[in-house]
Image (cartoon, rainbow, N blue to C red; front, side):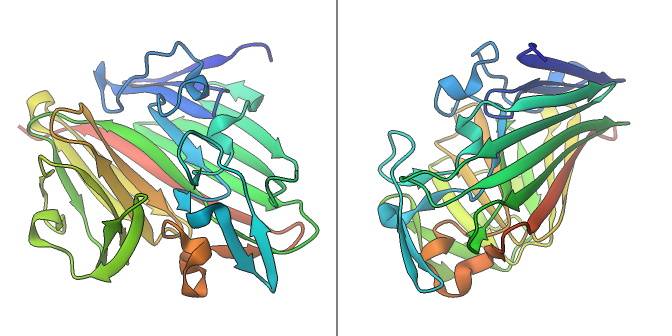
Amino acid sequence: MDQDVLHLRNGDLSVDVSRFGGSLLTGSYRGVPFLKPTTTAGLASHRFGAEASFPLVPYGNRIEANAFDFSGKHFSMVPNTADPYCLHGDGWLAEWEILSQYGGEAVLRYIHRQNPSDPYAYDVIQTVRLDGDALTLALTVTNTSYEPLPFGIGFHPFFARTPQTRLKAKASRFWSERSGHLPDAPTLIPRHLDFTEAGPLPPHWINNAYDGWDAKARIEWPEHGLGLTLTAEGPFDCFMIYSPDADAGFFCFEPMTHLPNAHNMPSSAGLVTLEHGQSLTGRIALCPAVLPA
């Protein structure tokens, strides 16, 4: 298909899907954006971080020193953006093939081939589906390398942030941030960053990982009378929360199967070892709805 941007509609729910980055450019319910719209007219991955949401594959967040040891071998990589560390894998920076679009569903594919700067080779299918008032994003990545490698997946939505935005997400552990935007040490969740009960986002910088997640989250925008429930299926034990400050106009709630820099943590911190031909699958559902009066 020659079309770069797909416009999916189903009742009150609408999203725009770009084959650049396999990304979402918009997401709205009854005309109210729940994702921060991009301004890149479909060329999302041509501008770093401009998407409204993008897939994380074959890992999310950063790999410290652009290297890791696995199964008795040392692997070195090359940074893929202006960031000094390899960031968010390859899918968000690649052109995806649109395999199909029918009604409220689009299926995209990206094939990544092994090269001297990257040990990964894989085939990934992403399905974007509108079913009633639910937006489902699903990823299935298959290892096409002839050696086992650690894989992880996730999603990186940029949710709209308003002055009254509230977040609820239950986890058991919090990771402080150190230099290089890497996780430092696990601690009890600080009170002002504990979203076990719905509460406002902090006005200052936040860029932290949580684990022991129960795979559910709730976001509300009282000014717009809108709420959204997020649920995850698959080995999603972690999430990241990122927002520069209260005036950013967005915050990111990023479901992930692993911690940032998991490649260099004990027990791979959630990464899944895939042999040649094995796959890892996960999905999230975003369900917006009008808040009760």
